[in-house]
Image 1 (cartoon, rainbow, N blue to C red):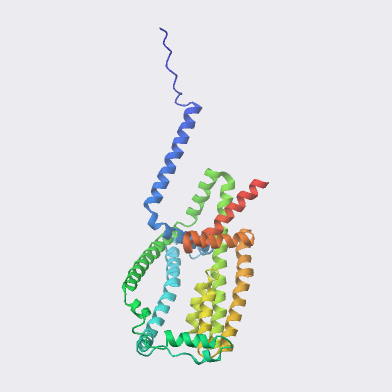
Image 2 (cartoon, rainbow, N blue to C red):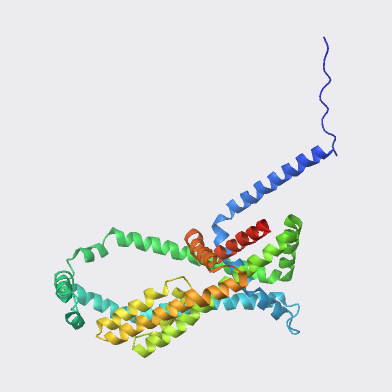
Length: 359
């Protein structure tokens, strides 16, 4: 009986053994990275927001660090920039809460009066060019009577309101937690400074070559362009419409302008604010001012959304308008507010890959 000699195992330094080791190492590293991401999954939104803000402010950070008096004071620079970001978020929110607390008493009195007497029909309804009779009949049947026993008022005291309150409180606490961890992460990123950007570029070059480093630069440019396009254009829309509120006689024009600026940072959300203000003017009988506010608001939004914002974002990323729009809307639908900035960056990757493929 003839026995075959056992198959020789690969030598320790043979090419096949080295290839197996590289594959095993890649699988191990990928598994460890996925495990780490799963462990910190609740903190990923905070890290994402911190990265977006840091990328947007990175050129400013370099200019500050190059100043003679501030050279080498990375901790102080990081603390000041982080505090400035915190104040930019906290101060408008505090202003809105303070203004709402001043109006809470009047709103409560109005609510009690509605329960006892109903809502008086505005005189403008009688002067509508069409549909005045139908609107009057509906108003008399649903709103003009005391609303204490109406189904809507009963629903305000039901379990649904308690559930909404609990969910709102939980979301508020979670939002505060994300905001706090975002500030901590942002401080650490600013403190790391150029060392962090150098390490990221070096890692991208080692992993993907020179093209990987260039792609990382273009993704950062996409994020900066998106921040500029959303934030700067939103502030511009809020300023113009805030002036329009003041001219039209809408109360709390400055606060409404701030709300409009925040809403304008989200695509196509500003009309919700100025149309609501126009409806208030219409209910007060100022029909011409209401129509003028709506027309002016839509002109501002049309120019900002279709010309200014795509130019700012598209020029920094060299993306076509359609990809910019898809990136913003698709990113927001997939990742929430953070997706507004992630979407265009991913569209930039897609555009770079397509350009390299067709060369």
